[in-house]
Length: 244
Image 1 (spheres, rainbow, N blue to C red):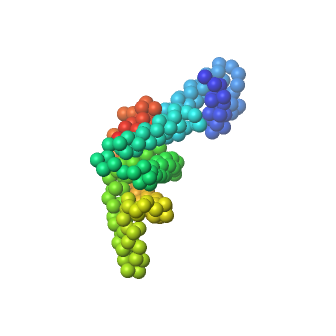
Image 2 (image 1 turned 30 degrees about the horizontal axis):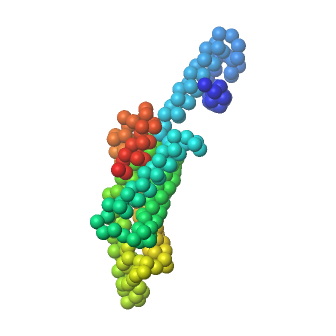
Image 3 (image 1 turned 120 degrees about the vertical axis):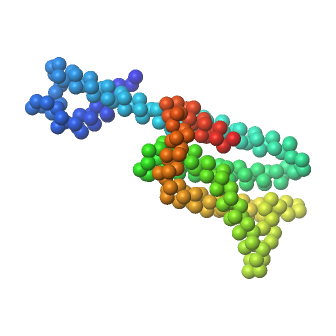
């Protein structure tokens, strides 16, 4: 492998453990003792590098497996939305289909980006033993359960506000209806409203995860722990299979 991988762990271990070296020199570089200690350091550094490489990463380096998986997921989502256009019992016009798809696609993209950001942040900041893939699974599971109910309640609340006498904009309360003919202004207003509700929902769910992080992380580890030695398979499970 690349010898540079071992340089940093070797130097770090040497500096952190220089008080443990026997003899007058903190870091012996000659003789059988020095050879044995350097070999031990090399073994420890290799184990650390291997362990680090086994952690499931949502993205990783640019062009890595994680990035290609995101491209594949986006293509599948777009193909499913196009396919749904031809399987609807009531065929929508292409303009209405585009408006509906734009709202759904924007929400899915925003949810995905926020979930990746939160998962990487939780893995970095929360002092809980869980990798980013575990956190992504937790966030996605909440989106598909409590998140749906939360969005329903938020949408109904917003519709009541639009129908109230003080606002008096009932046309904005008809989600999925854009006027006849379809009005681009109504579409943009519904698009912005929906994404604002998504942000509120994600803030509420993020607060829930932070408050119950230990229990949620333990539950995710119990379900996904058997995949820890197969980071790519684990990534496919949490990114592709789990949402399906």
